[in-house]
Image 1 (tube, rainbow, N blue to C red):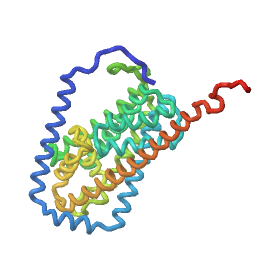
Image 2: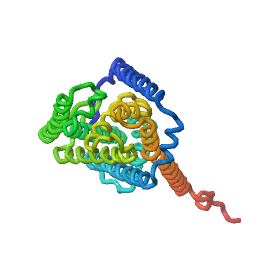
Image 3: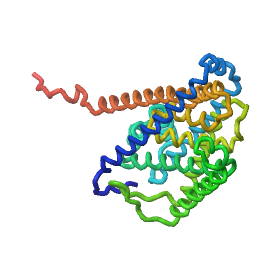
Length: 338
């Protein structure tokens, strides 16, 4: 549970640095994407989309469903760490809607946090605890990214060389460093049981067992999401799936740093740069279908679920208000009989 703490807000210059860095990353990615698009014929991309087998789309949808199921575990674990035991339906609905919003609109803390606030405060979660839930879910995601990137770099360090221009052996050491960082954090979380002070809050880190669950959930979620894209990609010159995990993890990192809505354009540019041997038209078709299956369709379902939930909450409030009003019979003044 969050413990309030007196303190000043983050300085303006820190926020500006983050914004400028994000804009630079976004600009570089758009330049790269523009250069790639000059080599692509739009008609060929459309043909590649139409040529995608139905079974491939079904498997991509299945991996997407599995990824969103695992994402529910992010919220379940965060709520449990804070001592809350909410109905699974509430957690599943809140998690799904919040991630569909943040995956599409970006600004995860704002979009995902607002949705979680709507769902969880109605179930008894304190508003300040929602802030920590968002932070814990984000931390679980980044632990998963570190794990996947580390595993991929160790297994196939050459796959990152087209983007980072480092020799494979150095990339392998970088992967080992990432895995060591994840392991070191797990040991630290197991041993350090004092409150952490961050900005205006104090909170406890998840213990070693919970950190292990975070690592597992983060890796599974991103692994299923990567599989949804991998199965859509052209088979020619495609690296093995363990190596592709590095491609996906790096694309997610750069997309997140860009602050573009859902990493749109940035994610695609990184994937295309890191897979230089793949046919550009087929690659763009796969990325388009991935956006449609993993982001846009869940977003539409999330909007529908949010609308239904808000309508039910509105009806519940009206029913409670009607019950609290005095009936005309009891409210009428007593009159003396003639």
